[in-house]
Image (cartoon, rainbow, N blue to C red; front, side, top):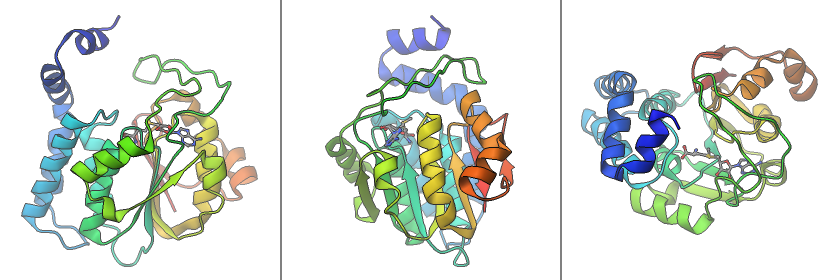
Length: 259
Ligand SMILES: C[S@@+](CC[C@H](N)C(=O)[O-])C[C@H]1O[C@@H](n2cnc3c(N)ncnc32)[C@H](O)[C@@H]1O
């Protein structure tokens, strides 16, 4: 058992939360300060940016969230800097308990956009993918049904901590729900762990991306996702474009795919 999983198992949540916040502070604090101290293209006040960061920390405390603050703060900053020249909705593919959904809904409110949330709300689909260690050395496995959290619980969390009036929920596996979605997309977050799920989302969403838009993969610490994103053949033969420019591939957990 690693130090991290041992701490998680044996310490009460407030202490474990504190441990996580201290562990990630070297990345989270500069991201938070950079966000709070700089204006954004979608007009926000210093107070609104400060409250958003405070809400992010509070949501992580109350809702189990497998992402870091600097990840979501970076994405929030990017959304608020898209500006009017990049119209479209924000898409989240993979909600889990709705922690990231609640955060993104608050960002959507600040810039007057809609948040389209896609998830099976039954966890991972059937798959025979072989997983293992992330680039940071932790083991990960995603059998059918893992990460299952029902739609009612997600809605409750978003109502309590976010702004549910900004959200549209699309329940079902991506392969079923995404092909019918035809709206322009300004920014999408894929956090779905599986190669097949990531492929299903890229197939459906890449053609919908507005010029200047961004797709974030929050799974880019998994070698199987890095291999997919690096694969020229996948982009050319399955998506029908040359491999797009990407920021952070191979060394960050979250990678920006640019359109
Ligand atoms: C890691 S969790 C998302 C974490 C969340 N974004 C957060 O930061 O709190 C992955 C989610 O992807 C969903 N998922 C994975 N593959 C899917 C698919 N093919 N169709 C629908 N949902 C899928 C799972 O149900 C799960 O809720």
